[in-house]
Length: 265
Length: 262
Image (cartoon, rainbow over all chains, first blue to last red; front, side, top):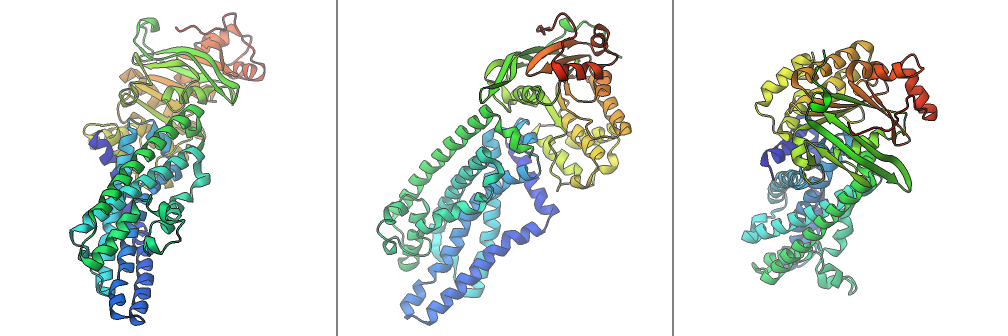
C-alpha cells in the first residue's frame, strides 16, 4: 500500500469540504437533530419515572452518539465512492495506479475523520444540553468506538459492492443499509426486551454487544469482557466477508464490463 | 515531423494478442491483435458499436477479455496492472474530473495518485503548454467543453506517460480548440516519444495525429495502414469515405484485410 496514494485520495475529499462549507453543516445537522430529539425524550422520561430509572435512561443519549459512529463510518465509505460516481470521476480513478486496498483505506480514513468531527460536537452538546458525559464510559469508550467504526466500514464496503454491481439504481442504500441493521442491534433497548425470534439474530450483529456493554457500563461501571470479545470476533468475520464480497463483485464487474457502463452514465 | 526510424525496430509498448470479448453470446471484439510501438500513434476507427470502446476498456484493464492477452511494456496487464498504469494515462470525453474542485486541486490530487515528483512545477508547465494557466483557480465544473478537455489532457500528461490512450479527445470542440489540442498531442508525441492509442470519429484528427490506423467492423480488424496509404489503396477520395464504406457494409478496401501483429 502506498501512503501517498491514500493521502491524495483523502486530500480530494478534504478539498470538497474546503470548497463547500455546506458539507460541514450537513455533517453536523442530522446528528444534532437526532441528539435533540433523543435528549428531549430522555428528559421527558426522567421527569416521569423513578429517580433510578431516570438516571439509567440517560443511556438513550449515549446510544444515539454511538449509533452515529457506526452510521458515519458506513456513510464515509459509501459516500466517498458515490462522490466519484456523481462527478463521473470513477473511470479516472480506476485507470490510475490505485490499488483497491488504497482506495478503501482512503474511504476509511475519510469515514474516521467524519466520525471524530461529529462525535466531538455531539459529546459537547450532550454534556451542555442534557448533562450526559460520554466520558462516563471511561476507557470502555475506546473499544466501543473502535468496534462500531469497524462494523460501519464493513457495511460501507457492502454498500459500495452493491453500487459497483447495480450502479446508481441502488444509490439509496448508502443511507438505508445501517437502518436495516438498527432494529436488531439493540441500540435503544436491551436484547432481552426484543421478541424471542429477534434475539438470536441480534447476537449475530457486532454492534449488539457494544450497545449492551454501554448500558452495563452506565449502570455498573463495568462491561463484560466477553461482550467485547464477541464484538471484535464478529467484526473480524464481517470485515472478511465484506472484503471477499467486494473482491468478488469487482471481479464480476470487470468480467461483465459493467464498470464503464455505469461510471460514464 | 515523424521519426524515420522504422516502426518494427522500436520497442513495443502495447500489444493485444487475439483479444476477444463477448457479452451475452454476442462477440463484440473478435480476435483483435495489434502492436503499438514507442513514439507511434495508432488510431482505432470504426462506427458506433464496432468494438473500439470495448477494445480500449480491455486495454485499460476495465473489462476482462473473454480470451486473449494484453501486454504493456512487455508485461501482462493482469499481473502488472499498477506498474503499467504508473507509466500510462488516459483521457476520455466520457469522463470528467470532479467538477466541484478547482482545476489546480484536481491536478494536485492526480499528481499524488501518479506519484508525480515536484507536482507544482509539473502542473505549471502543463497549464502553460496547454495555454490554460488562467484556469488554475477556476472551478472545474464551470469550464467550457474546450477548457475541460484541455484540463483533462493536462491530467493525462501529468505523469509524463509513455503510453497515452485518448478516447475522442476532440469531440464537441470547436475547430480552433481542436487544432490546439491536436498540436499539443503531436508535440508531446514527438518530444517525449509517447505511444498513443487514439479513437475519434473526426477523420481530420486521425489524419493529423495518427501514423497508422486500424478499422474495426463488428469487432474485427478489417483494414490497417497509414491514413494516406489506405485512401490511396481504396477507390475512395478521403479517409472519411473509407470510414463510411466500412461502417455501412464492412467493405474491405484492400486485399490484405487481416491485421498482422506488426
